[in-house]
Amino acid sequence: MPVSQSLSPVLFHGDTIFVVDHQGEPFAPIKPIIENMGLEWGAQQQKLSKNHSRWGVSIIDIPSVGGLQKTLCMPVRKLAGFLATITPSRVREELRPKI
Image 1: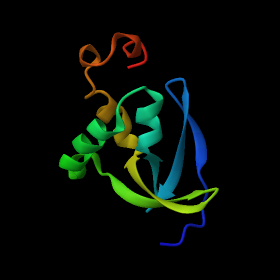
Image 2: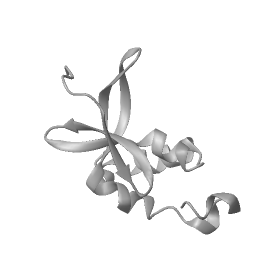
Image 3: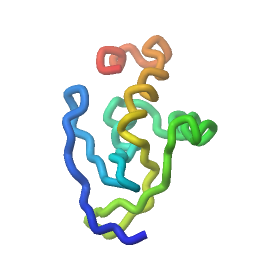
Image 4: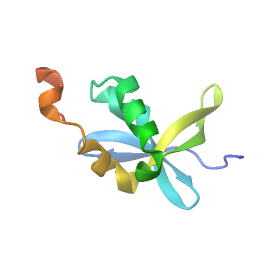
């Protein structure tokens, strides 16, 4: 799929995330969001992959300095719901305020 658009920065709960238009809807690369929260990407990737239809995730070609990168992305409209599934009591104490 050719990508003619670029990533757009968006303020999301005090952090900047990037979104790209995919089929007329804003999608966000999810890995940088998870890592920015201090969480392990592998565990969250498994949760997303197990129930990909619930979260609407797609592999999208995202522009980067090195060229297009296939990236797991989520519709922005589902992002807050997904983040709400992360239980603060199950993460390291120093990460809890952000989560």
